[in-house]
Length: 631
Figure 1 (cartoon, rainbow, N blue to C red):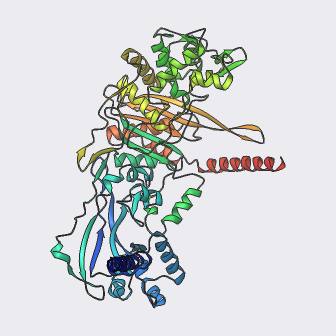
Figure 2: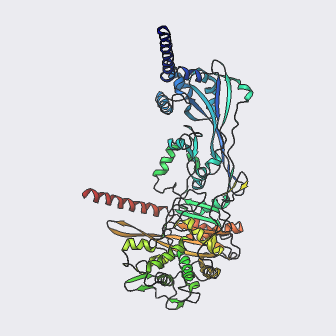
Figure 3: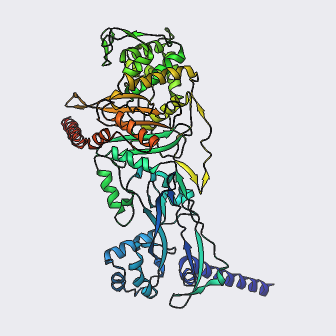
């Protein structure tokens, strides 16, 4: 028994020694890792071509071009590696070599990662011939974006290298050095555009040179090219709008009210998506971020503006729906709305005679809509909060105060206050209709985006409903069906909309739009003049108003709904109105006959004004900092 026990004990000891040794070799040495990596079979990841982007008329906007990249597996680099010779071959210095190598090591010693990217075909040819001499290095080919246009970054977006967050989120697909959509359509439709990666296996000789396919390519996985995307954008219209918006800040949105397709989405100042392609992309990105004019900020979908008098359309509709006014309701304007010490000035030029809602819209009478809003708030005399909440719910059903659930990257929902909001701000029963009367004319706490204003006009054109505004029409030539369902507002009585539309048409015959009327197209429009100011040295300094205009056309068969916001452009009829009118004429007639008006708009340069405002804001910032330091 003792001999048998000794035999088993010896057997166990020998087994433990072997297991310990195997554990040490596998865990604490790189021997087997190196053997696996030095195999004669090369696995090449095939990056698929990214899908192309077209406009609605099949004009190619974005395609691809090939670049080459050097890939490194850090653990395979030999001790006697000739750094100087390698740097000379690839055109970098030693500092860059060790910096890139350290970055690769921090990702993984064993996995391949990008060492040098954006190598052109011409520069790569001599590198490829001698690359076999440098163990640990390999190459791959991929496509990068090539934009055929020099604007509309807010729509198209751009791609950039994946972050650690991206890799963690989709580690099965993304690896370090991969590219991903960062903004615009490139981001919102990344999974369609990127395609699916493939794998190729190659046989290599002892020098690492490829000599043949492995196993007759039976193990290869074919890459799937990304899907092509066609936008709803009309590129000819887009370029025309950009031309009109030159040297002006603001946002323009044009939508087809029949289906919610965005025909034009312009944010000015504009930026060139080609700046985000190539070696200098990070440098250009930082430069644009520091630009005071914020060309990367999408004013069309993210900027929050007081809608001013354009909001009177919704005030009127709300009053009609809530039953506090009707088509025969008239109010008299005495150069403004006066209630005790409160006065809302009015420049409508029709004073001391009663006017109805149609005329009030045409001449943009502040008094009329202040009276309407007062009645809305006071509909329930003993519960003002209830009246404001009812109004707020109506307004929100028009798409204000929330984000559209669509294919845009917009994050701004705007501000539509409620009765609960004012209870928190002023205290319960410590406010009344006069406290918040500015809401009646689109000032006060109300904030909207240009795309929300354009959607409002779609609703008026459709008389009570809208299709969610969206920017993609086809994916691989298959129509998008996500936005086919109509969204109905709380106001569905077409008679109310007909009253509003009649008033909007009168804007061009007797109101604020006479100066830019298009005689061969019946349009329905509304001006807005949005007040804004800054505080400098504790003093309120008024800045030039924002110029706003909304319209749809033609009235009988609406094809386009437009909102235009020009920062510091002055009265709504001065710049925004003519621009909106010209856009409608261009889209409907395919040409513009009012050349003198067009020329006047294009020549209008507001850059000096913006420079002055920038100085004022810096002065305000410096004053605040100085005061804080003294404290």
